[in-house]
Length: 119
Image (tube, rainbow, N blue to C red; front, side, top):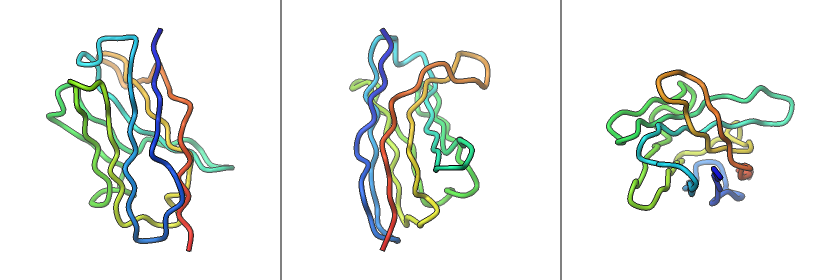
């Protein structure tokens, strides 16, 4: 079975940093691009960052460019999201997702990890 398990969320002050991890299992991890999305209460889920299967290319939402970095370790079946210079508006539940091969859709999701940015 496909499983995606996020960790690393928590409470951080504005300007601080967190690193999220997503442990993947149940599929051939190296064959898939992976992504991070986030959703705040009352708001739409949004794509934050994506990374290709090899890690050779990344994309980011305009709101996080220059602050967040997505990476992956295919030997560990893990994808990361390094979040720096955090803002209050970054507060959300962050979800790891698997991208379907060849199309811009996502077929599996983790349970999410809460990130709260507050002074």
